[in-house]
Image (tube, rainbow, N blue to C red; front, side, top):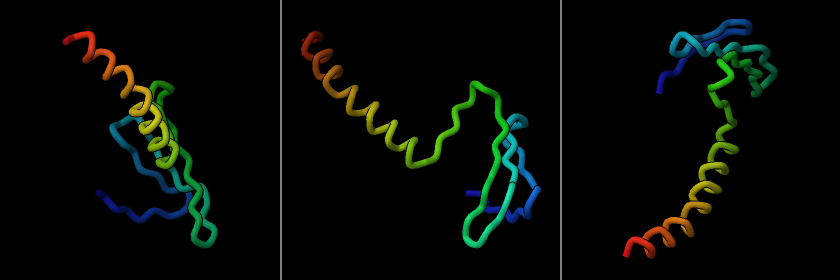
Length: 71
């Protein structure tokens, strides 16, 4: 993990196409803005993990059925 210090209105660039900017700092909260191409999905981590779990749960019955059909 790379840890950086940024002040309000400062940014960082990822892979020449994603820009993350510190918009505001209030107490222990930091508001960030993310500029990225439309094809780059951006999720809060807790939502991303929920999506991964839902995808995994949806796959399990299909995989079991696919394995039955193979044998």
